Length: 143
Image 1 (tube, rainbow, N blue to C red):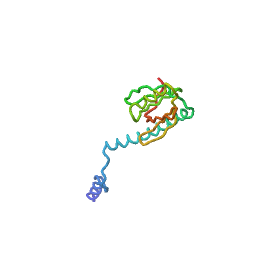
Image 2: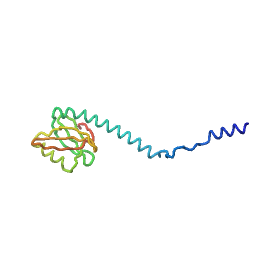
Image 3: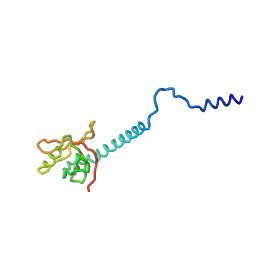
Image 4: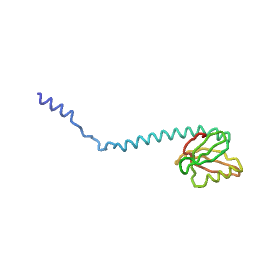
């Protein structure tokens, strides 16, 4: 009887094989899944904050007052006259230079924010139908 009990205990404690053939995720895969979830959550929060910050800029037609280099390559700080700053990058090198030239002679304003597959896109306009679309990559604060 003791042998039978010992055999039952040994069988119940023995490691079992999985019935499904799927392999358990590796630590790298688990880490990538966690980073993807955090990235998705932070992206949604960024887009929400961008909508909040740009709503007034669009509604009140707050003009752009300054375009400066950001600490990251190919990113510019676009500063508005109310103190808001958006970090953005252009689709084509030199696009922001055109906007900076326009700022010398006319008012450049933000007219819209749309979400694209490449990220949130800001549309700037100035007189005679000129339009420039740039990708928002972050928010900043006045120095």
